[in-house]
Length: 135
Image 1: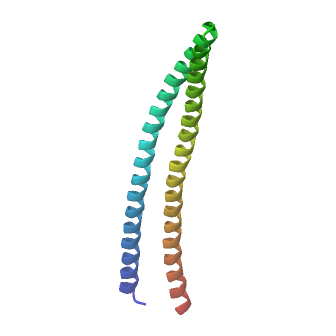
Image 2: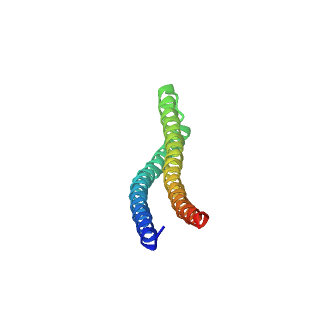
Image 3: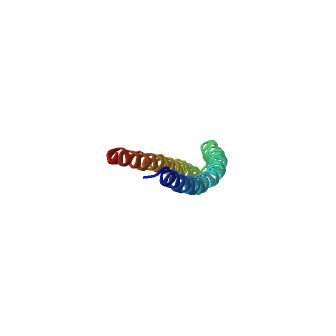
């Protein structure tokens, strides 16, 4: 292979590598923007969890404080407290699973970028090895 062919081959590999790298960066941008949106939703869920927790605790205290002869009042207050606490547990579970899901997508994109770089390096090395074998 002549020097011009080596240079042309290197340019092709470089152009393909840059195009692949830019594509992966766009994918990473989409993953990160998805994760940012998930963080906003998680933050809103945390605020809602706090409000529900306060509401649940107030309901529980009122239920304990106002134990009257009316059995319906007790069931209402305790029912509100239990419902609020269950909602807090569900939102907390959703927040954790949402964060893990988005984090896994970003990690997968970064791993794929590493594999692409290793593949391109391997292709460049294998071309050099082939050229050395021909000599």
